[in-house]
Length: 567
Image (tube, rainbow, N blue to C red):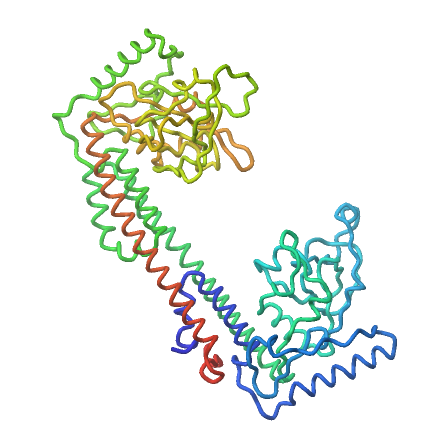
């Protein structure tokens, strides 16, 4: 398969368009993007013309003479070049104008009018009231992380009237087309061999001038530039279509699954499901669509639409009464403090209608909620002991991340207060607004483990309840909406306090139904996980295939690797 045949196939792979852009540039600078023409004047003639022009500028006093460049060793040539091309140092084919740059501090720029573009290492960073240059020139980033990560083009053309600071090299050429080709070439290669420093990467003028350039004849440069522009437009189109398709797919999936989630009865759900299920092959074709389905399953579950009710189940009122009695006993024994009664639940607080046999309660009425260890306390400890504790980063939705668990020193008398017991619920206090209240069940993963004060601990008051049900609801879209609306929000973060957590309205089915729902959700979430894994594996396979095709094209012979018919 040649690249022309695989162009759209490559674009459909993960990160495919980015790979295509890199491949186009790589083929261009190796002379394998367009055919050569024997009638073209060779690059050696262009080199001689450049040298004569620069000598004339030196004679006129317009250019300083620089030391001859080192001869290019065979080991410096990264690939073979077509007949008629030449190897040259960047400094041999360009005119450096770094000496004309003038940096202006941001404080000084604030005082000036915003008229002309002010360039830095990665492009325009400000406006200023004057200009240093009034012609098209090549700018190349001199320092910064972009030299390595290349998140934006490191070389770019500046036109019109503009100012350049000392973070971008300023380069002129004897031919306009040569300037465009050098821009393309610098963006096509890795600059790491020419960079000094890791914390603050820098490519000084000497390093820039030493870069080895594969130089085509001038007329071929024009054909290369035209073909690259044509193919980059095609990449733009593919990228735009892909982004639009992904956005449309996400909107469609969200809308259809939202229809399921809003079903008002099991009968309505069955009808909605049958209409949508026939299109699952189109809807569930990517991992992120499975994520939406999984959230829909959870929402259906906590609304009582996933399993049937059983009139023989013990009434939920009996469970609630036992919890209240257990709470009173704990208070009488001094194990808990009696809180101020939570307010009655108003109708406008109930996010959905409950099935028959369920009831609404405040979360704080059915569990014991406590905070954890405060770090950095100054109080002297009589009997210090170092123990592992969980941080917010350890607690994710549905699971714990225990690859890095730190220790904290507390007094031995505080262990019982802060320790975790099996089936305690861990609920995060804050984070990004959509991550507040993420919940996971503790299953004794670590012996004698504590939790910090930014994680709430919710403990059941009776044995015959399902903590997994509480985990399910607190991770549901309905609970997440409550936390988002109740959280105190700053610019980037949000948090809830214990009072808000206690006031959360909590749908409570009979215990037997809680167990049936949890089991059904576990079964369906596992199916989602399996499907997600298969889709991810397919994407990985597509990515590997694309990478292999790119490597084959990059290694192909000149005629075999040509792309002139790709568009």
